[in-house]
Image 1 (cartoon, rainbow, N blue to C red):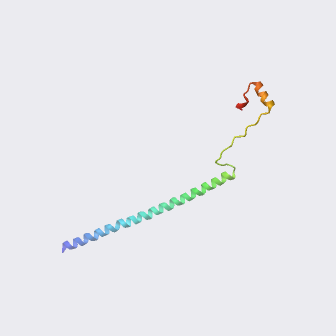
Image 2: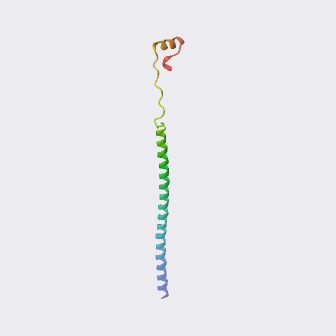
Image 3: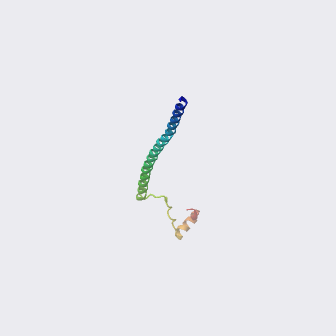
Length: 93
């Protein structure tokens, strides 16, 4: 009989051990869910700041396109002749 009692106690211990990991897994899942929620909140904050910065850049006249160079000034024949007489190449300006 003592053998039967030991076996039943061992079975109970095994069942308790099996239950612990499942609880442990549940606790881990709850912790991970909390971390995911925190990450999502941080992402939302960063996205809002990014949107605000983009709106400010657009309203402030700053865009991703950058600064375009000023169009080249066309030389009049007189200006062209003056540059040639001074020895300056008018195509390098």
